[in-house]
Image 1: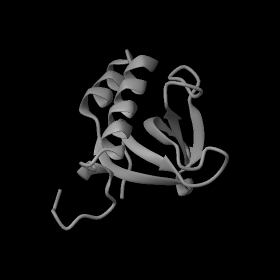
Image 2: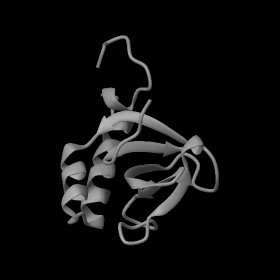
Image 3: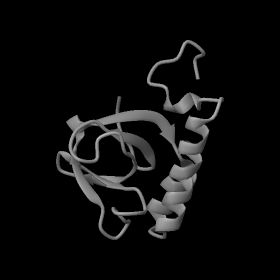
Image 4: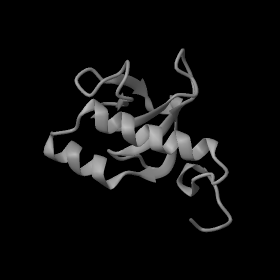
Length: 104
C-alpha cells in the first residue's frame, strides 16, 4: 500500500509502538510523522517506512492544510482523537481496518 500525506499510520516498532500518527511528508526512506503532542508539526518524528502500518484513512482536510502549509498541532490532535474515540466505540471505523469484506 502506498503512503501519502494526510494518511493515518500506526507505529509497529520502537518505544512508540501502537501509537497513531498522521503523515506530514517524506524524507528519503523515512516518513515525517506528527501526533500533535510530543511530535509536533514543527518537530515531526522521522520513522522508517518498514516500521509503520498504513491505514486506508486519508483525511482530506489535513492533506490540504499540509499542502497550504497552515497545519496546526490542534488540528492534528483533533483528527487523531476523533479516530481514536471512534475506534474505541461500537462502530469501528472502516478506514482503520487493514482488510475489509465490506469493500470500504
